[in-house]
Figure 1 (cartoon, helix red, strand yellow):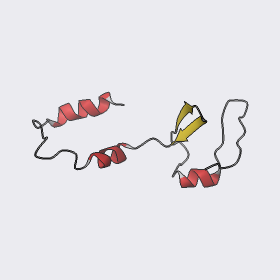
Figure 2 (tube, helix red, strand yellow):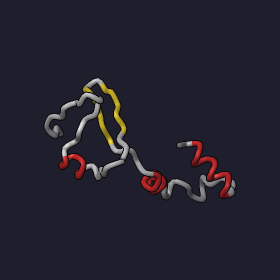
Figure 3 (cartoon, helix red, strand yellow):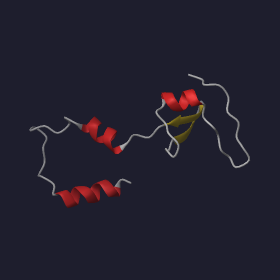
Length: 82
């Protein structure tokens, strides 16, 4: 889906249209990921930690469970991913 044109200013910034920001649930101060692809630039909203953990819900079952992890170890693992 093409959302019109955007102009790069003297500092290298691009302004996204209000419609696009609304459709992507972007607010001032939010980060976006920019990736160069064969087709051009891809701009996407990164997943939040809540969305990431929500997508993992149900992936651990009694058939593939591992030893319990203490909260401090879990906190270190989460920070390592930042």
